[in-house]
Length: 194
Image (cartoon, rainbow, N blue to C red; front, side, top):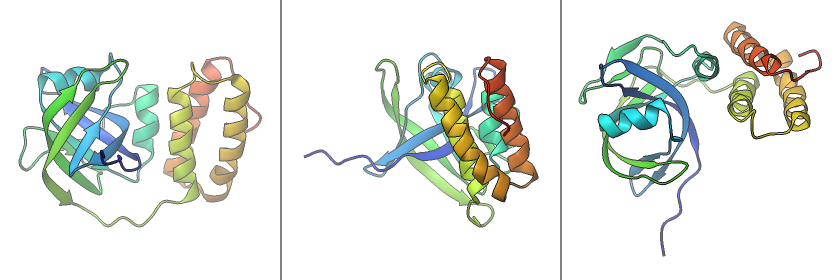
């Protein structure tokens, strides 16, 4: 019997393009048999980069602006060179994992790249998420699926998530939330005061 995949972890995957420039994208990854599975949509920069350069970094961060920023075109966050692979990790990562891609299945609409852990590095302690950080991540997922969800579903979810923003958001969460709300409103979806 095949081992089931664990739950999805929301992270930032940093890859290198052909010119050696870092590209960071939010992604849900899973673990199976000691390996990390990355499943980017096709076409995407992450997919293209992993096919060309079989190394990447998984960034564990608590700055939700990076998640929101990727969905509105703010992808340029400071990076530092990795320790054991040719790659980069986010300067504000609490921890990062350096991976070597050992195999991939090129299925549609998502490929599955299997990464072997080369090293794990801790940079700062994780102090926990507040509810607003979770709300921003959920709103980012909604924004990534605007063309797949009904207007009513988006309006309901944003109305609920805005409660956590109102109660627990700090400056970073408010900034990220504002970016996502603007992105939704650019599509013509009307939201109640959020």
